[in-house]
Amino acid sequence: MMLRCPSCHISHSLDQVVSDDAARELMGLMGTLPKEVSRPLVAYLGLFRSKSRALAWERALRLCQEVIALDPNGGQHSPRLGAALSETVEALRAKQQQGGWKPLTGHNYLKRVLESLEAVPMQAPAAPTPASALPVATGKSATRDTISQVLGRWNTEDAHE
Image (cartoon, rainbow, N blue to C red):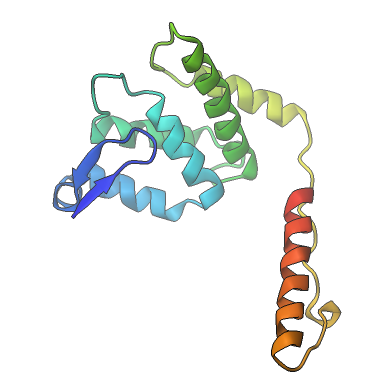
């Protein structure tokens, strides 16, 4: 079975990934991270890859461990780390589009973004809607209406985050 990286678009066999110690450790580490951190981290790792070469598993693992060590929440995977990774990836991809860009060699840009985010207080997430506030419905059309209302609330809650 072939796997394709969404960031660097390199294809690897699942057998190769499982048989390589660094690849297996990287996948295990990524699996412990919340999606708000792991998704932008994968994209961030792609910024270290040159156009002509794949990123070695050992280097990807080391870079991932270094990024996690930068977490301002002491390794608890704070939302600031995910936000900083996303902001870094967006900014550097814009530079890539302009041309003359070279792959990253260190985490200095990410460190500056993290510092700027630490200076600005993060908003607390919106409180979830209590179950008692959800509408009660019976019948198929009422169930559809209830689902639409709940999804509408989730969408507006997500928009405020």
